[in-house]
Length: 121
Image 1: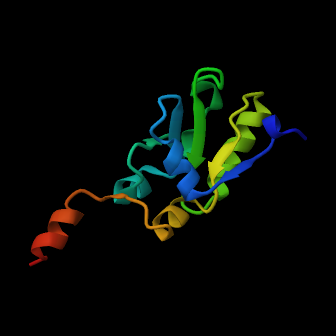
Image 2: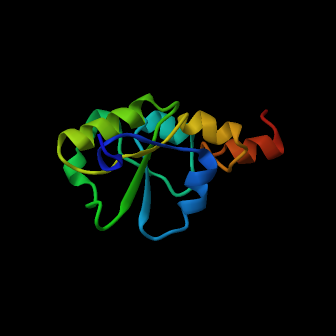
Image 3: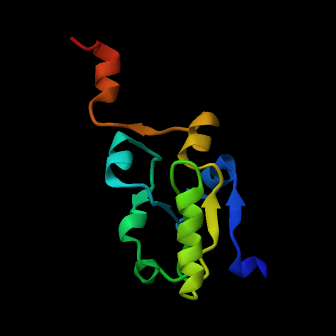
């Protein structure tokens, strides 16, 4: 198996470092309720439950990096791409949990930030 057709694990900091590049798309394969609760800035939602690798940009056009909560579903997304002959092979090892543990920024659920500032009544 070559590097072009196997899962590539990226660290949270490696993902953060490439996020500013216009050719990189971070795809969150968690479900909508998980995405609504908290997410990585710049990530787009494409739940694994409705995932279709053919709907992604071509690897020649855009580098796709997948993430989920802990890494299992994003690895499955890579597997699904490879099964269709689409060479998107990168994912955030450890998922959203690893991103948070690394102290990288997240977007909380709507209202959570405000509630945290002003307290709940």
